[in-house]
Length: 286
View 1 (cartoon, rainbow, N blue to C red):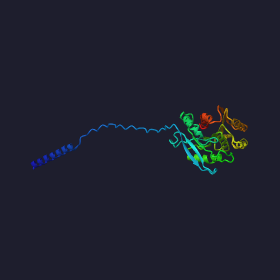
View 2 (cartoon, rainbow, N blue to C red):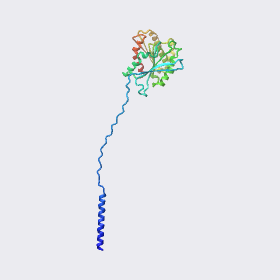
View 3 (tube, rainbow, N blue to C red):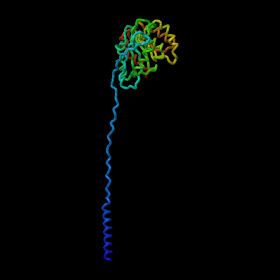
């Protein structure tokens, strides 16, 4: 019996030893954590900002049917460099009228577009639009013709609706040469709420406007009087008529600028002064 108990005790001791050894074997050994190596992130490449490199404007040719005239009103539109580049930009507008017996290409031939391209490139003026309307029937008087009313009442809103203009009065001017200057002066003063500046280059005022003009002046509020420019050449045969009209402006306290340059009532005179004209119009928009 004692012998049997001894055998059982030895078996129990051996079983316990085996369990301890198995547990020791099953216990995993600690593995050191791998060191973290930072990964370089790719450098963000900035998106290049588009830059307009245009240095010349362009012309578009348009025609509208008005309710005031029996024939269509045709005109050309100068759009400054980069007009199509940024669709959020809006521009002042100059309505530039030609002389008698000429048409809407006159200011183009006189170099108005090239002059404005250069002024913009040199940073002298901000870009603006020029509208050059054609007076088809220039042999009729200012009362029979509906050219001026059609410009103010129908062409202006059409331009503002079709092009990206600054439609406020202070960003809109009207000017012209010879008969076109007469139309600009008459239209700009009658429709003073549409035009903030009026230019009369070699002004050849309409017969009768001298007597009508006081009625126009009296309707213009004191704080809404437009900027007015008149220039003539030293050998201009129409200079005396322009002086008479300038005297009318002075009599009724209408502020204006009077300029005399060398030259006659000819295209070379207007071509030689076109940059001066454009600078003056633009000065009111700075």
